[in-house]
Amino acid sequence: MITVQAPEAVMQFTIGHCSLGFVLVAASDAGICAITLGDDADALVDDLRDRFPGAELIAEEKDLQERIETVIELVEYPQITFDLPLDIRGTAFQQRVWTALRQIPAGQTATYSEIAERIGSPQSVRAVAQACGANPIAIAIPCHRVVRTDGSLSGYRWGTQRKVALLEREREGR
Image (cartoon, rainbow, N blue to C red; front, side, top):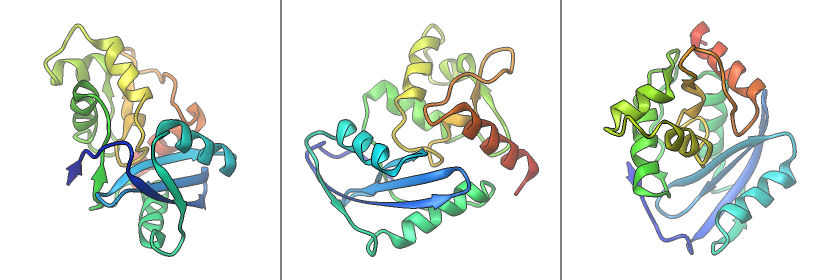
């Protein structure tokens, strides 16, 4: 389920730890609106504040415990399926890109050009790359599965080493 809400919502968030560092999960009443990865928990909270400047942010471990456990499982075992409610916030174009990303199976990749073709905007390769970089929901919207036309890895908002690790785990079928 994908829902779009006004950015002035109340959001709860919590931070956990996985093999790739810290993971922050933020949720509105409609669902998860952010999953971010990083080496510094405070920096993840600052990024959340920057991304949702009009939102009231409430640190909450108890209410989000099950969701963060599911997200950590997705990081560690990307072949599992999940049914997390998502509250995806972005432009109409970004949402089309993010929907296409969710259709890339675990263990496979697609190029920016292929994504542009899939959404019916073959000339929008750079805009597709920008939408991948703006993705607020790591793992659940798998922008790490997008590569350059030659198959090489490009940047990843949460670090190229994390992108490599996620792709390797998916290919291993962990």
